[in-house]
Length: 542
Image (cartoon, rainbow, N blue to C red; front, side):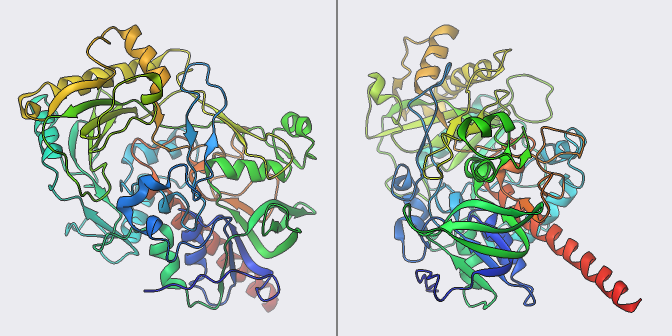
């Protein structure tokens, strides 16, 4: 299906809508598509990046690594890290579909324990596993025939086939260490298990991004307008209500306001949502004053609570030729426990059939084209970071400071060190004897906890899963800028729907959960609209 992507023109495009969604990414595309299913409302979707139609490197999943630090990446530098890798970049997608058009499309249902905790521990009423699992089923069209799965949703999920012999050997080696081969996305939490992933990809290799799955099929809807290549600079608030969004068509273009009659939904992601709110005067008052932004709502939780999955890497030269074709090059995952008796895994690894020397080569470690790696990451890192404005100029990149490995107890580094050791244990099993050659990095001489920690600090990466920077919570929680219906406290007609709303990051790759957040946001908005209509009917009858 060919999807037109005309460049929007202010002279011909509507500039007022019932609902205005800012950010056409993993949640925003879902919200806009679902709201526009109601023909009685109009929906405008503002996306700073281009339309994804016809961009092969975006649409073809196996090419996803080409997008890192490309023109389709906001490519945010990190602030100097006191205990982590300051060379890192936080990739954020600059294209319709957001990070679902930019990532490896690893598709996970979050563990029930994760979502139930949002409600039980963090007070996000209504956000529980029962609701989330219903929405996972609604959104997916899963190749797995099980009754647990959805089979008629917009997002195609497929099982990665066993076509990578080194990957198969890795899974056999896991079994030899006591990590059994276990299917994912069954509805039961995999605490100790490994397998090839499910991914959101169509049979022809096209990624099932939020844009491909939700927006492309809606291209002919007259009530949905996609304003791509349009940059939001500020939410316009009048008399305590969001009434529109100020936008520009390029960095030096004239500003104009796109109006919203009913609501503005900010879905710009865990970095750019807090940035936009702060530029609009909603955020920590002292910080806003420091950069010259007038304070509209003192919301100290905006840009706080930033979480991520920090990722280490250990790589071996391969004794045999590695695969030359793959669905997306990171096809298998391993979950296990470092600390016993937890209800979720505290360690996850991705298996990569590629040379992953992104942060090791500059440090002097050897490299090889024919190699494979494991990337231990901390599923529930305890370090917390911030997103802050660099200035009041929307053109300036935000100050992103994840503060990796700064938790006071040293938990994050302890799990990471254990992950490097577990990866070595896996590689030492008989199943990998024909595959695992020289350990390229960190190398056989790096053995003590101190040596491993030093290596991790200098070379670690991120799994690109920032979340939690505009979390939802109960009314009395001053550090939760949102209520459980995703409404911004202190401003009417303004919601947030993206990874920033998570009180705590999911154990697993979160992208399908972000789709789920978009589905839930659309339901909440529709329910509120139905309630208003009912009240209007009652009032009219009086």
